[in-house]
Amino acid sequence: RRSGPCRLCGHGGLGGGWLVCDLAAASAGMSTGPLETLYEALAIPAGARLDQRVAKSLLAGRGELSAADKRHVEAGLERLIWRATLRPQNVGVAAFKDDQHDYAQIVVMSAALRPDAKAARLTETIHRAIAHPLVLLSESDAGAVLSVGIKRRHEREADRVIVERLTESLPVNPAQDETVSRFLTSLPLVAVSAHDLLSLHLGWEARIEAFAAARITSSFRLPRDAVEATLRRQALASYDLQTRKARALRKVALSERRLNRRLELARDAARAEADLTKLAELLR
Image 1 (tube, helix red, strand yellow):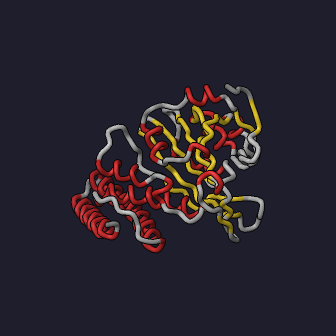
Image 2 (cartoon, rainbow, N blue to C red; image 1 turned 90 degrees about the horizontal axis):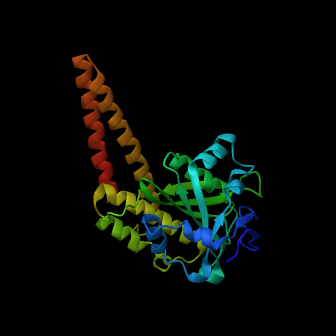
Image 3 (cartoon, helix red, strand yellow; image 1 turned 45 degrees about the vertical axis):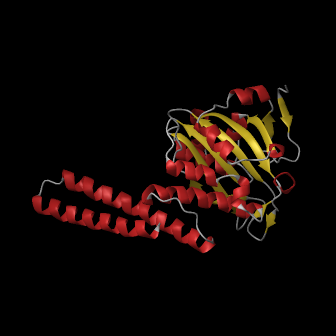
């Protein structure tokens, strides 16, 4: 057993930070529930695994985070574990670099969230705080969630990276159904058939989006290519927006006392729900 702070040379840290390398403590924080099921589904090679706890104070101390973000970390994060660092030499997938992206490695972390945590805000905060492209598995009372944060260089500050796009899965719970099983089966690193680390990251993102689409269509299907993946992403965003619009209209209609106005709102809600049906067809 190793305990106390140590520097993980070459792993970059939170931009070259310190980890609490207490392997027993990290292992004690790992459950055998949905989060571990999700993590094992990634089938990350043993040579890439670290399983070392990150000091929460280090994350909260990141200069890029606002005071509100730091409060969310302190109040909502129970523990954060650095599960693996994926590099060409340990996963057999090439690095990728262009004018916008630098994918020399992908970091995999897991986060245990407290019951009162603002999960979406905290997930976004962790993705922004980590300098490298990140795959995050977070667990709360709702279940385990897989999120992928595609990173790119800042347009004006070459030494900074930003989250270009953040994609989160629906919660995975112990009571698995066929859709969850198909999602988990699609996740192994070798099954993504990536030609570089950026395409690996994008491949996991596409699987999260396929899972979301399957909850609407009852059919889990991976996109055929990048064009179809982009169209599905746009359709999912439109479906989410239209769902919220239909719910809002129904809610207002129920509280409206004037009969004519209530009927008008009900018709608007029906049209919005008809549009949802059309959008669902685009997701098949």
